[in-house]
Length: 157
Ligand SMILES: [Fe+2]
Image 1: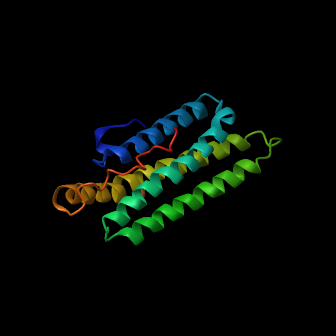
Image 2: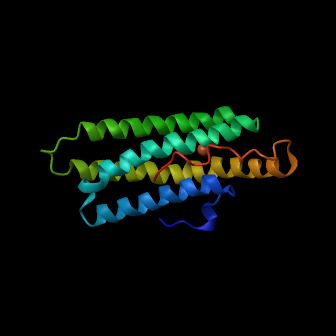
């Protein structure tokens, strides 16, 4: 999976988070194909924890500031994704190293969760949110909606 403009939600801060996610998906797929996923699966899942803490909370803040009408529905999807990541983290912590293919299966499952998130959330709910925020920035009463100190400052890929 590569970053393309089709994936853009039109809000730079959010797009930067998404680019980092796409880059991790690509890295994990390469590792699965080349049989070295056991060396990077821990890092990939730790990235997902940081990503969800930073990107999802930034989006939630934007939704609150702009009184986004779809907030509850959107937040439910975020919460469900965070639950999925917690499950992956638990599986990582309990990985049975005596099981030959354990890290391979966990890597494939992690990749599935990430790709599903891109296809089902980013390309739908986040694009809708991005369009709403752009209109708010132009016509709304929140011209500084994205001029926030939280702009990715604490997110390190
Ligand atoms: Fe979202």
